[in-house]
Length: 402
Image (cartoon, rainbow, N blue to C red; front, side, top):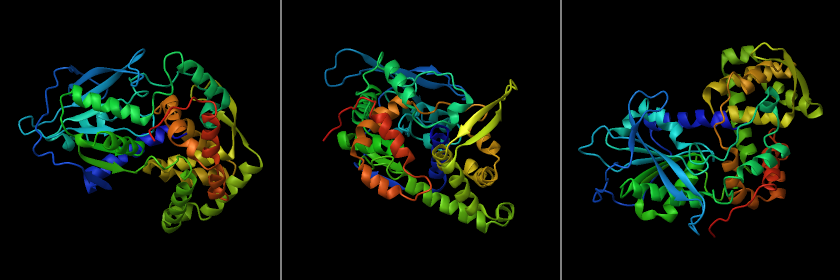
């Protein structure tokens, strides 16, 4: 699935920014005259796993239904990594997480280690968007078998159970981007900041664009990496982007002496393994890490291709793709399963939040005929569009601004 790989993509993009700059920067207002940074007295010192220094943590309570402002509330998890130079401190940086469904506070370790430079004169503010992290996460614990990791993206029973479970503690129509960005502005005011800088990656760029639209007077600059605007209609173009990335990966392998020597027919291997799985899913014996015995797993073509596509997000995983494809084309799915299952695949994305956003903001606007036409003959096919469209048919649809 898309979960574990988005994390590596975000880390890579942040590192690239630190080294070579950014893709898009928007300057909205002159912040030189605005010095209202406020105090952080509402926060308390805290420690997060894997971080040596003390940070500042707190919880801001907001209404789940911002329109009626009655009923259930949400505690927004807030973490601030303070600027090192407090005397000449500039406006803070708010990092908006991707997904949708990732927790912004997962980025704390980056800003405490490799990304310390961001904090020379700025606080870095991480707010878990409603439905993610520790802000009423729209996810549920499930006992996952090895087959889970190589099953379709949104099995019907899983989506039904997820909705039934989450509706006991959440109105699933109240987790769209526009609502969440009003939360973010509440957090800005609560922390005492006048103007802020935004940094968004992937879905985080959509969140930044929506915040800029709703609260333009509060934004100094916005840095957007991997832009996903509101009109993108995710995942209509995932397959096309995946095919371009795969063409580049195969080309790089052919041009690299070692890769080409190891996998001289890598393009044919890719075509052949997809054709084999299209004809018949692979049944593979998989040895459990706890040595309790092997289990039989089924691998379908859509799942195989989608796993490969998401692994191209991260450099390390992408480097292993030629081996995975070559071995699978020759009947050995061991490398594929080890990558897909691994010792511990974290639940990085809150599935319920992902569905609440995309089922309101993207999927209803997908032209199914257009998507089928665009993805016809594509090695990644219309798998993602089908999976998300079916899931959204079982999910309550929130309202979005016109």
